[in-house]
Length: 306
Image (cartoon, rainbow, N blue to C red; front, side, top):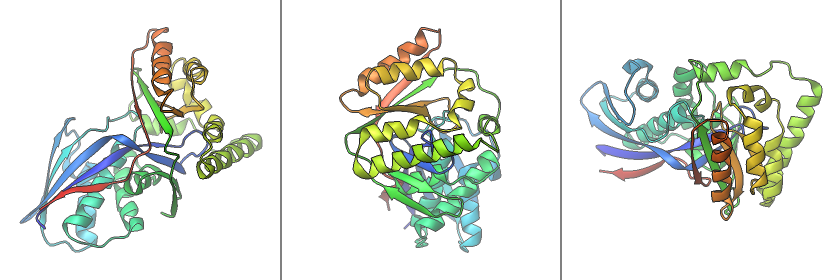
């Protein structure tokens, strides 16, 4: 095989009560990465966003180089990335690209890597992007569905109810440099016992809701946690927008990843009304936003090979 193309999905992490543990793949948007064999070296070309980081600090090149070194790949690789997942929105942008690089290299060179090994390699890209290897987004991007992930690359997947719809709305707000690191700095290192107890109860409710296909329980499981209340200060009128979504058919609302995108869980029949309500709530306070409706998606897929 001389050339493969991989599609890798956006993802939403935390889901209110599962900080650094829960994530789900989104049906769209996606990154599309094409990898080709060359004689030597690694060369990356990007479409959709400018290539600002040097090659060795870019997540795609970083993952590819790590795999080449550790798996003893004796060839060069050309990389063409169509960046469909927006950067800095809380939709797992770096995870989508990192996962695409790992899955693409596995297919191109027939490395027979396990899902766990793919997640570990993709985590290298997350370390490049944010300074630490977080495995929630990359696990969802690689295996799809809803995942419960741990730092030791242990994970389980749960299929979400088919009637679950997801509304994602991104406000145009000023964010600090290195937004993800700043968002992590807002999370308390020692939350109170009451906060921990309530968060564990909420997370358990969410997982039970997924297993039993109970949308009300899924929504309730997104509502309580010790992270979103601290990060809400990054998103003006967060409480008002959440209330508008709940009043128009959402079962639960949370910050997607490090934000500023908000995620609302609802049904397909009510998804349009929820999206419009969230956008209007932002508009009332002079904040423009963009939103879309999607569902839970599959993981990385090889969509072309030759």
